[in-house]
Length: 303
Length: 286
Image (cartoon, rainbow over all chains, first blue to last red; front, side):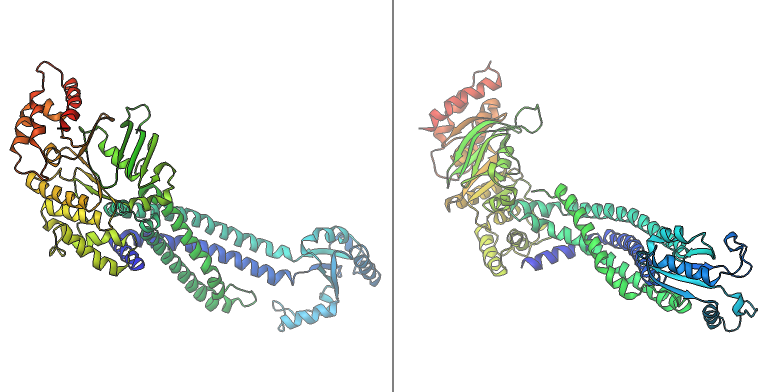
């Protein structure tokens, strides 16, 4: 009886101001799409970090023939210099470095020809064009500076490079985009809250007669307010579901079907990630509606 | 059933109290008229009983509960003990008579079979059997008020508050409504009725509580409307006499006689009212 009655009231309320309900649905849809997009961008950044930070290394390039660098004035790095560096890695930097891998010129050439079997930019390179290097895997990739300070300037070292640097600008761009989306989401969420508040107030005012009688005959607060609460919540959750749908379609066609086909060497967010954030979006929508309706209702349907 | 202990209600800070230090008690099964000019605090008293308002000072007890210590959580429970009827009926225009009455039970979560039994019973009690499917606008004023009474009584509350229930009705229809309220009272329901309708008060010969600018000025066991007759002597002199019937067979005329005889011509209205008040209890005993 109770449930049926509440549902009937709810249906009546939703039908009575369809346009407002639709606008609530749309505004929550748009705002939560931004929220979701921002979350997906963060997820993407996380994925890239997981994927790449495992692989990134600090490369210590040794002096090749004819390097303009002042530390390489003596010419190509000698085996003695290489041995001295190895010694430094094992003693002074033992705590910082997890593994050391020495890539000789031959190894570098092998890797190079594997990648560019037809030569690089039309020129065939030889083993002597390659550069020997140490590949250091750090215990904590953040401690690059320590290693850099110790190794840079030593005899036979041309340059020390942190591969993380390469990604920093990409991460910065992604972070900025995600911040932008979050900012837009905040503005839209504000609009959604105001709209839900207005909708519920309208609905409450248009049913003042009913609620007045309900109060007088002793209906409980919850019973009086539930249809309004549900009205806001249903509209908002509907918006959230639309947002999830929109994001799913976006990820499927933009990322899975297109981006990951054309740029294959990167880990991407996928539909599973969308489904993972879906409960969060629905939760936000529900919370949004619940909070704004409780505030409104306490003002307009007080016992 | 209802007890006010030195109740004062001030709406706005600094304003004159709407109800000023009122103490009264209404016992179970009583029928009480609450009379007084507009703004005398009748409606505020009803609001206080319903706990729509809380007293600024003093205590209100309803059905054994101290409303001051009643949590807002329990207010609905209190209101289920009280039926309310208004001057403007307050029916839902888009619901039928049956639905209007059933609404009161639905919203407090009564099961459907209870509603199916109780609502027709109540409608029959108020004399609306056969009009279940009508909408309020298809009914006369008196019938609409009967629907409102049915809605107030369908949950069998021990208390019925009526705020000028006959205010929008013609005298004959009002009489029908009063008969109905009287019948409800005889089944044991405590009825408190705020009214301006002196004819009805005079005919019913029930307890009268009169308020004047928020203070209780009269509490009389079998009272008449009293005061107004003296302020405007002319209609008061004729109206009670021309009353067609008496609702309850009680000695009405004995009370009526001394009232018009009272006024001193050069007195101001207010003192005159007071003097009548002093006389009224004396005559009531006759």
